[in-house]
Structures are given as structure tokens and as C-alpha cells.
Image (cartoon, rainbow, N blue to C red; front, side):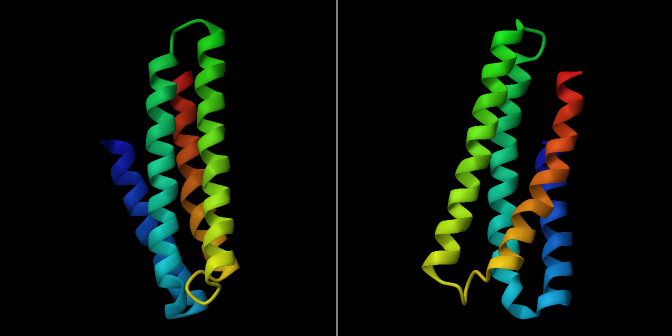
Length: 113
């Protein structure tokens, strides 16, 4: 539940900064890809927490699932930008995704310690 709150808070902050920097056109990409990044990290965190304290092979598999989900997020980004550049301009969309994903990834590091 804590990671969800952090992800939603990051999404709000990143979206606000993107709207300030890029204008109202950055609102939709900020909200959508902030939510996508939050969902990816929540799912990846579930796999990681299940593998914590187990043999290294299981931890490595859980890490691989999380990385696969993050790659899927990159393909979602690419698909959104290619589908409609006016709704999902590349730079604000990428900054929204990474601006939420990367801080949440660092919060997951505490899980495997």
C-alpha cells in the first residue's frame, strides 16, 4: 500500500512539473505513464518480495520478471508515441514514465537487503 501511495504522489508531482514545463499537452502523458510506471513497479515489487530470503536463483527470476515488465512499459511508451504524437509527445511521455519508474525502483532496493 505504501508503494501505491508513493507512486501516485510521484505521478502527481511529475505531471505537475511536466505541465509547468511543457504546457497542458503534457497532462495526459504524465497521468497515463505515471500510472503505468506505478503499476509496473507494484507488480514487480510483488515478485521481488516473494523471492526475498529465498535462494539466489529465485531472486534472479523475480528480478528478471520485473525487468521484463519494465521493457514492456518501454514498448507501451513507443506504441503510444507512434499511435498519436499529439496526445503523447515523446519527451513529456518519456519523462513521465521514467520520472515515476526510477524513484520507485530505488525504493524496491530496500526490499532485497
